[in-house]
Amino acid sequence: MSKIARRKFIQLSAVAAAGCFVQPGREARAADMPHLTEDDPMAKAMKYTHDFSTVDPATRTNPAEEQHCANCALVQGNDGEEWRPCQIFPGKLVNADGWCSVWAPKA
Ligand code: SF4
Image 1 (cartoon, protein in one colour):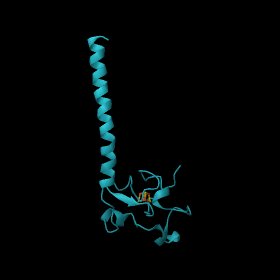
Image 2 (image 1 turned 60 degrees about the vertical axis):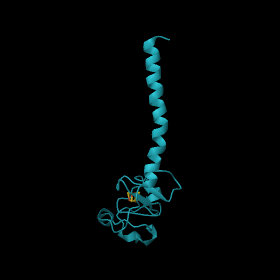
Image 3 (image 1 turned 30 degrees about the horizontal axis):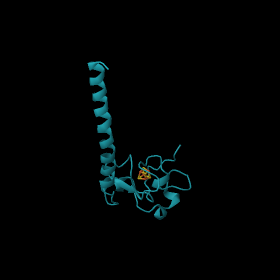
Image 4 (image 1 turned 90 degrees about the vertical axis):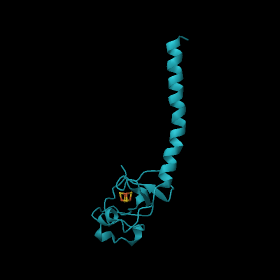
């Protein structure tokens, strides 16, 4: 292996090793994010609630029958988690049983 190839190999190995340490940190940050509160001004503006069953379907603009954060196209994180990141509320976690007026069906 030439000196240049060995140097490139070492650089790529270092980057790959660093990636192994970055991923757990990213997950830990998501878990450490605060829960969105219903009295948050942005949550109020979007009519967010922790419990989708409290929303009168007649008041929703989207006619889809079953609407909650866990089946919304904008939720992030993993299925089965009680609190998950949402694209609409960056830096906060929403309840899987929550709902807001931006709800959109998954494709
Ligand atoms: Fe829940 Fe979707 Fe509203 Fe986010 S955009 S709070 S996931 S309903």
